[in-house]
Image 1: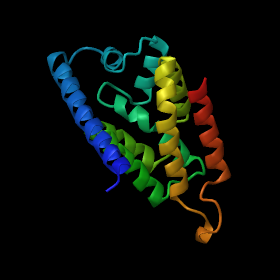
Image 2: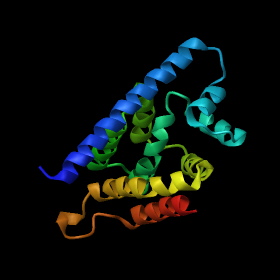
Image 3: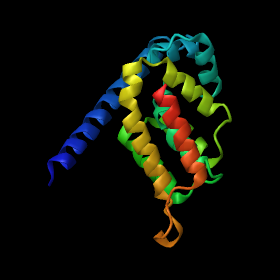
Image 4: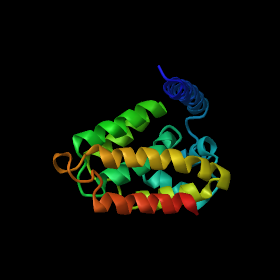
Length: 183
């Protein structure tokens, strides 16, 4: 086995462990104060302080238990960019969800996005979320997010393997995502 493969596997296992650990901490937080507004719980779980953005995220179905699904928004946007999500794109997104350690609540939200087109304001809310992150965090995310989004775009493949697997609509979506992460 190659060292790169082992490093990638180690990172994936670490990410899954910490995602499960974070989910458990969030569940404990919910249990300790179930009457607290979801917006406050989301603010605590995400570290966001922008009230308008928090309201938008809650309206889109995000909460403290589904905040991890934000990392999959770019993949969903790319998959839906040509109007339909094919089975291979869906498989790539579900694999990324497993790698991210998405819990049941996040998987439910993701399933809704894969079954029918996500809400129109999802990309704009994700872009605002990304801009709310510290610049160094955004830069660190850029490579990972764009790599995963490109994998989803390539998953459908070209016509009989002869043409590029990325449609013009997917290229446009990838450019929007890259621009959001660059600024």
